[in-house]
Image (cartoon, rainbow, N blue to C red; front, side, top):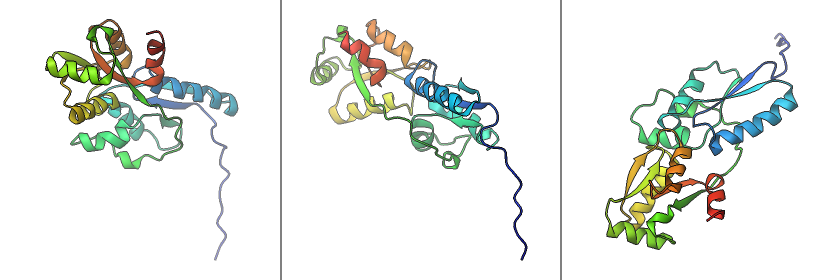
Length: 202
């Protein structure tokens, strides 16, 4: 037998790391990798770039990372949709969700249901009752099929019989939340970190 000779490897990381976020800038999904990336950049002494590639509830960004060189320098920071939800909703994806190697869970962020004051609903029961009395007239904002805001609302509708109509916002939760605040949209599920300032202000 002969000994195995291993060549010396440069320590990781020794160059720029790119973190792809498959959601819009300004969202919780975007802010978390920026905070963590900043800390890692200071620790490692290497630049970390966060690149937003939103669309198709996370599929576009996931596909970009799946096609990148598998060398640890192009990372995906994502919520559940592209890897855990979309494989069951889309008949064909341009990437294999099971081929990704998980590194770490960064955070858990619950969703919260928010409604425009113009609906007249102060409780969940009131929102359901109003939606049933005006079928299809109340509008809810979604981020498209596969997004957790959409799935949460569809689950609520199935379990309660609520009757709200889906209005997709391809630009992410920020513009949708503004339309809820402005009364153009009646309700939506949103990450609690995005909704909490508005909840606290009434």
